[in-house]
Image (cartoon, rainbow, N blue to C red; front, side, top):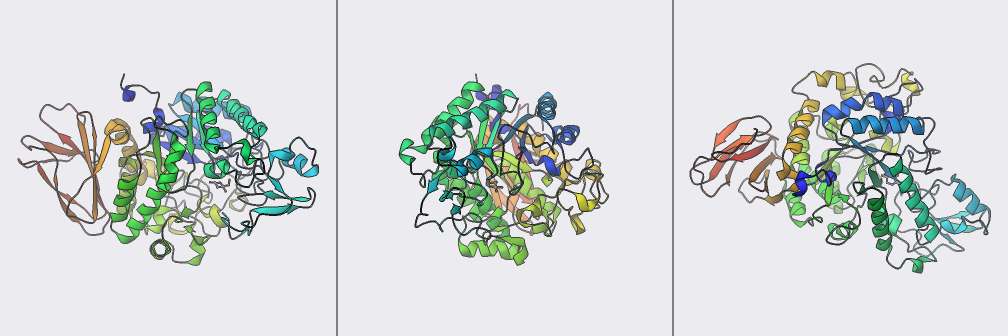
Length: 557
Ligand code: NOJ
């Protein structure tokens, strides 16, 4: 049977949507979103065309890293709800064809986790060697700091323990030691637990950090850390053959490829495409897609059943760490010139619409690109309506503001006082007054309607997710043209990165007799010339998805 005719490899053409329950919809008026609130809004996701919901951490936490600092891997933060609420949410979602995955954050725990409290209290604690300890920090302790504004070492001296411990992120997040078999087994147990409760897999946090055993004195126990990722995937697949691992791996393409595993893909099912994302912003800044095109040509093909996770924004800063210093500066100059918009010298704490001056055509072009290029699109909540950021919020929280459902001071997020919310609401031109779900639902020209259309067309076209993609050569530098072929279907997508209209000439068929193209986004058709040449106009920041139609084709266009 053809893989596209089974639902087994569902992640290959999923529409993933990430949200933080805390900022989505508040039902008990405490200013914090809750699981029941998300359940009440599940039809918004169903209508949008979401097929996989990624929940950011909902576990008990002191919340010093927005929940990525966990004190109980088997728990649910009581401020958000209960296990019962979560099971209801998963049931409601699945009833609408939406699978639910969640963050698996096992590179580290909170320093308030009972394991760490026990570990630091005594050298004979059974949890002592679940973490990584040293009497003296290694010479490279100041290298590779992830949060350079807050940390200056990867090692912290702990008075109670009388030793230094490793923390690749904040000092309140001590690293677990996966060279210790007991830790590896516990992680499998955590996975097994949540699969039983109905999750369909995980977004795996910080995978290269998790596999990095360099600091551990017992590193020899796990000669090849990828063996553990293989074990983890094998365990996951044994428990649930349709469960997925979507990994956060921000490395070069060559290094990222190794996290998919062997040719059959025996490690992560999906890796985020951080390189393509960064090159896209560089191309936007230059109004010239050349750098993106170069990246797409260099991007390794994933194993057949694996997929790249493509994205425009996520909950972190827009990292530009893989660009050169000059390239990064170009993006800063174009999209985040104020120092307050920048973070750690390498990223922007902004969302897309304000970076593009809220130019709707340009924003729509970017999402059209996201849905038409090979890869599984991953949306961050609020992108579907074009939310902005609030720079008054601290650090990365600028992009984690409450979801904007309606007009009003809390954007319909909560009945609490606007000053008592989990985060400040966006102000100014992109405040709930101007940007909200209720208004956009009624407007066929809204961004929300556009994203619904893109999701629907993308789901209808196996060419885009399963097909072979070719970046086409042509003479119009501002336009990226890519062609996706699958069986007898062909789609050619055009995206204009410039504010000037463009005309493009492409050969779309050997012989053009009786051949037409139909734009799947507008329904407009045009004829191909008899020699197979297509001349097409693309408006300023315009885009189109052209299905090539030959006599007798039975496609819905
Ligand atoms: C990556 C997450 O995306 C980020 O938000 C978090 O701070 C770090 N991992 C540490 O868990």
